[in-house]
Length: 192
Image (cartoon, rainbow, N blue to C red; front, side, top):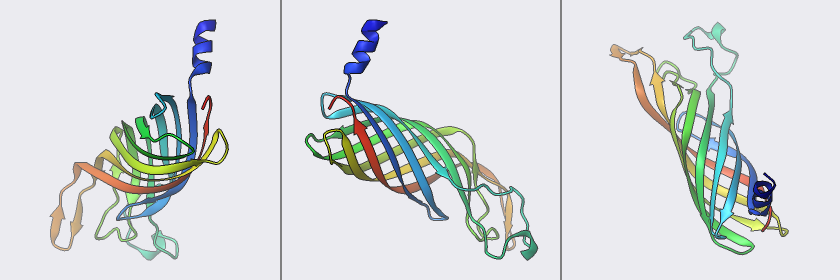
């Protein structure tokens, strides 16, 4: 056990917190992400990340009357994902990186302000994907500030049955929803 603790203490561990915005064609929302990884060979980090869009969730009820909503139309965007990630990066104090992740995600709720033409989407747990690129600068030996542009996808998203004009649009449970993320991060690298 002591040998295992000594080996773990010798590994170059990276921790990172980031925040920014998630952009989707229906709604934009704040996004947060936490990442932890082990830097192998000084150019490849294997890790895990948790991504969350902490927005609000709708009532899952349809109401077209003005009294059902506040004075302004409401939109919702809430999701969470967990990924196993792989990040390839350059060395030095100024680093460029590309990363990708595969995991499980859940789009909890996504809806625009116009529910007549575009009903709310709901998801259940399913495969989720993350691809990104960015850069970071080590402002001290261990502390890094960075920026990342990434793309994520949630699967197993459902849209309920609805009527649009004279057309009956059937429900579906096989949709996927994408978002582009712009995040700013602070990271700490142990054993760098």
